[in-house]
Amino acid sequence: MDTSLLVWAITIGAIVLLILVDFFTVTRKPHEVMFREGMLWSIFYIAVAIAFGVIVWNWAGADFGTQYFTAYLVEKSLSVDNLFVFIIILTQFRTPANLHQDRDSADAAPERGPGPDGQHHHSQRSQALPVRR
Image (tube, rainbow, N blue to C red):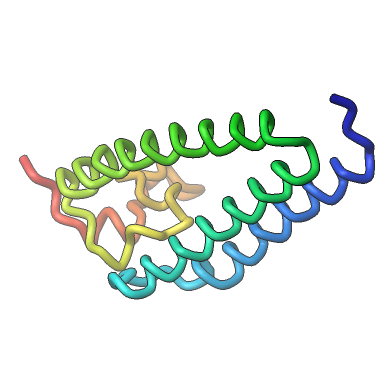
Protein backbone atom coordinates (compact mmCIF):
# COMPACT_ATOMS: atom_id res chain seq x y z
CA MET A 1 0.00 0.00 0.00
CA ASP A 2 1.42 3.36 -1.01
CA THR A 3 0.77 6.26 1.30
CA SER A 4 1.25 9.77 -0.01
CA LEU A 5 3.38 12.37 1.70
CA LEU A 6 0.23 14.46 2.28
CA VAL A 7 -1.42 11.64 4.26
CA TRP A 8 1.72 11.24 6.40
CA ALA A 9 1.87 15.01 6.98
CA ILE A 10 -1.79 15.11 8.05
CA THR A 11 -1.32 12.10 10.36
CA ILE A 12 1.82 13.49 12.00
CA GLY A 13 0.23 16.93 12.27
CA ALA A 14 -2.82 15.43 14.03
CA ILE A 15 -0.56 13.54 16.47
CA VAL A 16 1.44 16.70 17.24
CA LEU A 17 -1.84 18.60 17.74
CA LEU A 18 -3.08 15.96 20.21
CA ILE A 19 0.21 16.10 22.12
CA LEU A 20 -0.02 19.90 22.32
CA VAL A 21 -3.65 19.79 23.47
CA ASP A 22 -2.68 17.28 26.16
CA PHE A 23 0.35 19.30 27.20
CA PHE A 24 -1.44 22.65 27.45
CA THR A 25 -4.71 21.43 28.98
CA VAL A 26 -4.19 18.31 31.07
CA THR A 27 -0.60 18.37 32.29
CA ARG A 28 -0.04 22.12 32.35
CA LYS A 29 -1.02 22.32 36.01
CA PRO A 30 -0.45 19.05 37.89
CA HIS A 31 -3.44 18.14 40.02
CA GLU A 32 -5.22 15.15 41.45
CA VAL A 33 -7.25 13.66 38.62
CA MET A 34 -10.72 12.73 39.77
CA PHE A 35 -12.80 9.93 38.27
CA ARG A 36 -14.98 12.17 36.08
CA GLU A 37 -12.04 13.99 34.50
CA GLY A 38 -10.14 10.77 33.87
CA MET A 39 -13.22 9.17 32.35
CA LEU A 40 -13.86 12.14 30.03
CA TRP A 41 -10.25 12.20 28.78
CA SER A 42 -10.34 8.42 28.27
CA ILE A 43 -13.55 8.69 26.27
CA PHE A 44 -12.01 11.49 24.18
CA TYR A 45 -8.88 9.51 23.30
CA ILE A 46 -10.83 6.30 22.64
CA ALA A 47 -13.13 8.29 20.33
CA VAL A 48 -10.07 9.69 18.51
CA ALA A 49 -8.70 6.15 18.08
CA ILE A 50 -12.02 4.83 16.81
CA ALA A 51 -12.38 7.76 14.38
CA PHE A 52 -8.86 7.08 13.07
CA GLY A 53 -9.75 3.39 12.68
CA VAL A 54 -12.88 4.26 10.73
CA ILE A 55 -10.80 6.49 8.44
CA VAL A 56 -8.29 3.65 7.90
CA TRP A 57 -11.14 1.21 7.25
CA ASN A 58 -12.80 3.51 4.69
CA TRP A 59 -9.57 4.62 3.03
CA ALA A 60 -7.53 1.38 2.96
CA GLY A 61 -10.22 -1.30 3.20
CA ALA A 62 -11.54 -3.82 5.68
CA ASP A 63 -8.29 -5.81 5.90
CA PHE A 64 -6.23 -2.84 7.10
CA GLY A 65 -9.11 -1.57 9.25
CA THR A 66 -9.36 -4.94 10.99
CA GLN A 67 -5.59 -5.00 11.52
CA TYR A 68 -5.72 -1.51 13.05
CA PHE A 69 -8.56 -2.30 15.45
CA THR A 70 -6.96 -5.62 16.46
CA ALA A 71 -3.66 -3.88 17.22
CA TYR A 72 -5.49 -1.10 19.07
CA LEU A 73 -7.29 -3.58 21.32
CA VAL A 74 -4.04 -5.42 22.09
CA GLU A 75 -2.25 -2.16 22.94
CA LYS A 76 -5.18 -0.94 25.05
CA SER A 77 -5.17 -4.14 27.09
CA LEU A 78 -1.40 -3.87 27.60
CA SER A 79 -1.74 -0.26 28.75
CA VAL A 80 -4.15 -1.37 31.48
CA ASP A 81 -1.43 -3.71 32.72
CA ASN A 82 0.98 -0.76 32.86
CA LEU A 83 -1.49 1.17 35.02
CA PHE A 84 -1.17 -1.48 37.72
CA VAL A 85 2.63 -1.12 37.62
CA PHE A 86 2.37 2.67 38.01
CA ILE A 87 -0.09 2.30 40.87
CA ILE A 88 2.30 -0.05 42.69
CA ILE A 89 5.28 2.27 42.13
CA LEU A 90 3.44 5.44 43.19
CA THR A 91 2.00 3.67 46.24
CA GLN A 92 5.34 2.21 47.32
CA PHE A 93 7.02 5.61 47.17
CA ARG A 94 3.99 7.24 48.86
CA THR A 95 3.75 9.85 46.14
CA PRO A 96 0.96 12.35 46.91
CA ALA A 97 -1.86 12.21 44.37
CA ASN A 98 -1.36 15.85 43.35
CA LEU A 99 2.18 14.98 42.14
CA HIS A 100 1.23 11.99 39.96
CA GLN A 101 1.14 14.23 36.86
CA ASP A 102 4.16 16.39 37.72
CA ARG A 103 6.37 16.92 34.66
CA ASP A 104 9.35 18.04 36.75
CA SER A 105 10.42 14.50 37.55
CA ALA A 106 14.08 15.57 37.68
CA ASP A 107 13.25 17.44 40.88
CA ALA A 108 12.21 14.16 42.47
CA ALA A 109 15.86 13.16 42.87
CA PRO A 110 16.80 13.11 46.54
CA GLU A 111 19.93 15.16 45.96
CA ARG A 112 21.12 17.46 43.21
CA GLY A 113 24.79 17.25 44.12
CA PRO A 114 27.14 19.94 45.30
CA GLY A 115 26.36 23.46 44.26
CA PRO A 116 28.80 26.27 43.50
CA ASP A 117 29.39 26.71 47.23
CA GLY A 118 30.37 23.04 47.62
CA GLN A 119 27.26 22.26 49.68
CA HIS A 120 24.75 19.56 48.75
CA HIS A 121 21.37 21.02 47.84
CA HIS A 122 18.24 18.91 48.19
CA SER A 123 15.25 19.37 45.94
CA GLN A 124 12.08 20.76 47.47
CA ARG A 125 10.21 17.54 46.76
CA SER A 126 12.73 15.32 48.54
CA GLN A 127 12.30 17.46 51.62
CA ALA A 128 8.51 17.28 51.37
CA LEU A 129 8.26 13.51 51.00
CA PRO A 130 9.20 11.29 53.92
CA VAL A 131 11.64 8.52 53.14
CA ARG A 132 10.43 5.10 54.27
CA ARG A 133 13.20 3.11 55.95
